[in-house]
Image (cartoon, rainbow, N blue to C red; front, side, top):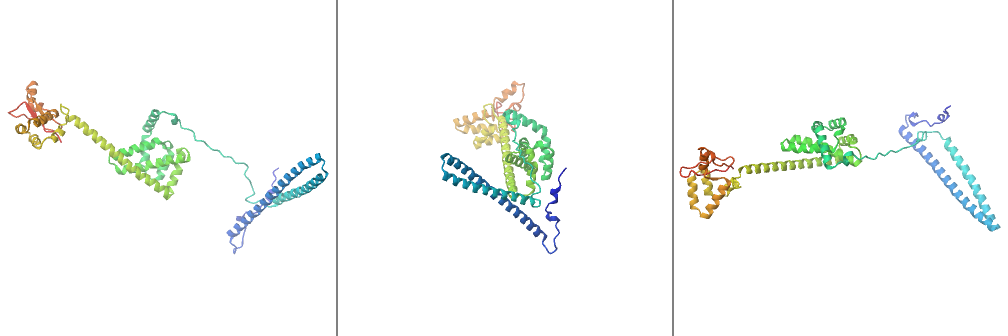
Length: 387
């Protein structure tokens, strides 16, 4: 049978009491609670003081018992009588303390149960989950790169959908449905995508994706701080953002602006590199038979020689060469031949191919006009370099 008698002696809870309309109910409840807590504290203090006196008395009894044994062995009657009297007094004191302890226990049991004493915890248990190392932690660098590439190829469309979102609520809902996206691979893909968009001059879209990138990076950083799986920090992160904590939001915005600046720098560096590669490729196409660039050679020629090439006047070129010092004329002529600006024996080359005209066989710089021999010198032609 279950004993229900203890429920007959319960202090009625405050919210069930009826009070006079002129009495402040809340103040009355507060006073009653404080008075009850004070009584419980006083009882606890009395019990602790009583137990302390009992422990001290037991210690004295134990010590006197040892001294009495020594006195009896030494047959010191005077000492024995003094110790026996002290032992008697301590035992009397012990009985009084035990009676007081029993009285306090009965007094505590006589008090009605209340919300603070109605029940006590049966047991408590704490479980600490140690984070397990990911399998990727044991992979080599090449294996990690291969694994990241597979992940990006497989989830590219979902990552782009996440990158196009605007609102925190939409981002949270999407990640809760696709928790596998909360990882470093997603953040890395978004970073590369931002740079691609900036190169394509899609600035507004780049800034939107950049915002989502920083969200992912902050989420991953929060998981590291809490030593939790990133999937478990999706809700805490977005709840924190929606609370608009000034310090946290300011830090987020500062990092976002810094990231956008870095994206623009990387995009410009990529554009500059591509332009240099293109210019070098075009330069290689222009290189003459002697390994010189016709554009560079043309720009290094004296003004009067540049005018000859601009006018495509071979006779003027020959006349100009004759007016120059021999060494200087040889120097410029050799550079013109090595770069393809001046093509000697172009007429003979054309005849060797079946009477083709010298104009079709003359070397040309990219974007330049074909070389046109004059009636006076059919074996020498020159070309105007492209600028």
